[in-house]
Each structure stands twice: as C-alpha cells, then as structure tokens.
Amino acid sequence: MVEASECRMRLYEYRDIGGGLLGDLPGHIKAASPQLLDLYVVGKPADAAGFSEIDPPTARLGVSTAVAVETISSSGDDGNAATDHLQGITAIGISGADKLVTVQMLATSAAWTTFQLHTETWKEIFHCFGSLWGTGDLDPAGDVDIRKIDDTVLVELGAGDNEGNGAWFKVPDGHVAMLWGGQLRRITATGAWANDEGVKIRILYVDEVDKLIGAADAALNWLEFIIAGQYGNQFVDIPKGFMFKEKTEITHQHSSAVDAGEDYVLHLQYLIWKK
Amino acid sequence: MSKNDNEYVKRKVENCKGLIDNATSDAQREIYQGYLDYWKGLNDEVADEIAKREKAEQLAVAKAELEKIQAEEARKKADADLEIITKLATVTPGRENFLAEEFEGENPNKHAYRYKDGEKIKTSAFIEFITTKLEPQ
Image 1 (tube, rainbow over the protein chains, first blue to last red):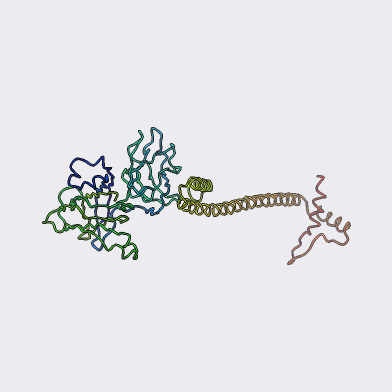
Image 2 (tube, chains in turn purple, brown; image 1 turned 120 degrees about the horizontal axis):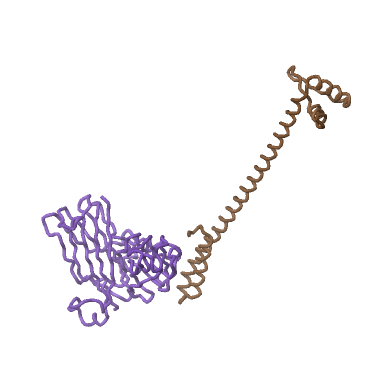
C-alpha cells in the first residue's frame, strides 16, 4: 500500500475571517488582528510501525535573515504569455518582517524555464499553490519550483497539480498561535464511511528550548488524535485552545493502525497573532 | 540549463552580485555572499571542466586528422605498389634476364637477386631499375 498525503494550506487575514468565528475571543486578541492558518489534509498512512510526516516540504529555508527566492518551471508552456498554462505561483511563509504572508510570484517572461528572481524576501516558506493561469490550461504544464538561490527546491507544484507540498509551519518571532479547532474523519478511498481499524494523527510541536537538544529527541511534544476500531465514531473534533509559543515549529504526522492504507481527511485551523 | 552550463552559472553569479548590491542588511549581504561563493566555486569547476572538454575535443580532431593523413599515405603506397607489380607483370622472363645482366653490369657491387629458402627474389634495387626501364613504355 502506497503512503500518501496532500495538504491544502491557506492563510486568512483578519478581514477575511468570517462571521462569528472569532466571536468568543478576548478583545485584546481581536485587537491584534489575528490571522487564521487553515490546513486541509487528505491522507493515507500505510505503515503501522511508526509515524511519518504529512506532505513534507522538499526543503526548509530556515534563515534568520530574510532572503530572495527564485521560481522556475520545467515546461516552456508555463510563463506570462496569454496562451501559457501556469502564470503565477503563490507561497505561504514568514516574511522578513516576521509576519505570516501569502505572496503571489508571477512569471515575468514567456519562458519560465529560465529561473526568475523575485523581490519578496523570506525567512521560511511552508507551502505553495498555483494561482494564475493563461488560456493554455488551468494547471502547470511542467513542474514549477520555488527554490533557494543555490537551486535547492523548497516547495513545488507537480505538472498538472495546482496544490504544492508543505504541511508544516513555524510560529513567527513575536507571535503566538492557538489551535483553533478542526476535525479528523475516517473515510474510504471513495469518500464513503470507513470500515477499517483506524488512524492516528500527531501534531508535533518543537519550541526553541526543545530544539536545543538533538533532532532525534526534539520531537517529544505532540498532541495525538486517534480513531480506532470500525464500530466507534469515525470522526474526532479537534479542540480549540492549545497554545504554541513564538518560533515553535509545528509538523503533522500520521500512522495507520494496520499495515494497509487507512484513508482520512484532517481539517486544522490555527489562529496566529502578534503579541 | 544546469549547474554544468557555463552561461547558467555566470548568470547565477551576476544575480548574486546584484543581490549583494541591493541587500538591506549586513546579515542578508553575508547570506548572498555565501551563495555567490558557492556559484563562483562552481563557475571555476565548470570552467575547468569546459577547458578539459575543449582540450579533449581538440585532441580528438587532431587524432582524426592524423589518421586521415596516415590512411591517405597508406592508400598512395598501396597504389604505388600495385603500379610496380602491374609493371613487373608485363616483363617477360627473357627480358628480365636481359635487364638483370644490364643492372649488374651497371652496378658491379649490387645483385639483381637474393635467395631465401631456395627461392629467387628480386632485390629492391633491381625492381626499381626495372620500373625505371619500363617508364618510357
């Protein structure tokens, strides 16, 4: 059974967070104009032996001073010509001002196979997705990468896939994050109710102090959500309220109760605001 | 385009220089300098690689040229040998005897024939003599 997971990550600005969602928040948090990081994961852990990271990025940028990045496509059919396919890619990450941002990076020539340097500078990039298309097709013609200046790929869109990889994030310096609910639900591959043994999800959080010890020991902290057995509930409501300090790195893992594909969907929301 | 492409690496180097020029802090400049050093290092490697490749290509061209000249010389020699053999074939035994006497008369210190394993073989000087004698025909 092939392990699989795909994360859809979106960042909502305060002005875009709807209706009563923030109704019960204290006034001082509302005053800080919190942002909402929304993760929607479709996964299939295949191995009962251990946990694996959900939709990891290709590489982490991880710099304390923000730097420029490049984009490039493997196909000449992506670019800024009207008849091209993908014309713009959007990234979510931490800007030079220690703020969570969503930035669209546009192709500036018809030949995106030549790498393009972008003006926005980043400390981290978590995720990417396609966001502008020509008349050619509504998805990338080639693999489109966001990468470091030394050509190390950070996150990427596969040809024909508008949702890139990356399901981790880091709480920016000077900010805090709160787990703001969500839901874990077992499904079958067809989307019908599951009838298998179960799935485990972990939210790993590693703060600055945790990082001082070795990487192998660093992942000591996690929240765990389990759906076990075919006769129990096939969904778990993720609670609100768990707090994460600034600079905490949050990754997500999954594991199957048996050595077989265990399909699930996971929706998580994190509210993040400046202290 | 790849890291083995000299133009690509050169463009990377130029980009890094631009980033350094426009850096907004010393820390950022330092990171870009790291990238520049990386690409400069690759640039040298690529330049060495290209020089090696060009040298190997030049060597291959020279070798091919030499082989062509050698083949041409071998062909000319084979043609000349064939011409001599053809001429010798036109000499009757009587005429050969007459020429042998003439050759040894003109060259008292040379022989028209040598003997190897009981076989009578024309000397190269005699063969040359015969061909010069046949030239006017």
